[in-house]
Image (cartoon, rainbow, N blue to C red; front, side, top):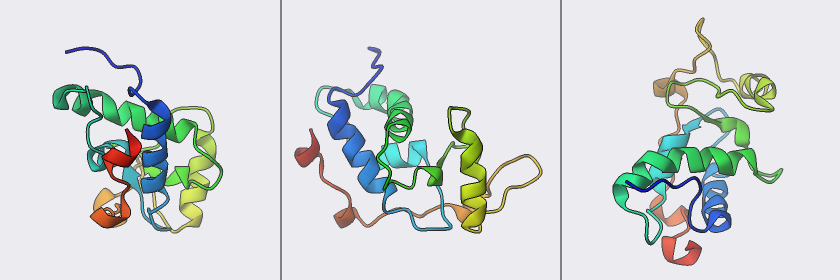
Length: 129
């Protein structure tokens, strides 16, 4: 499987990630992988490679997002905040939205997880890649 450190068209991919993140309502969270699954594999990237690399690409998008993107609402698949610059600000922002962390610093994804956007709300691949 070829290695993809970033999507073929990073800006287009990032724009799509940010559009989805803007749909996550206050008091809910989504995972990097969940967002990746909402975005079709870019042209030229095999589905298996996309499944392996896309959650990291989503993380890259969230690390570089504009101010109007609720970046704090995207966490890892374990329900935890991923270690990165600015991570110390994420928990207080989520708690201010009513999200509760357990004793192991996890969010209950069954309770606080976002069920996803309507398909019509997500930009289509043809417009992005």
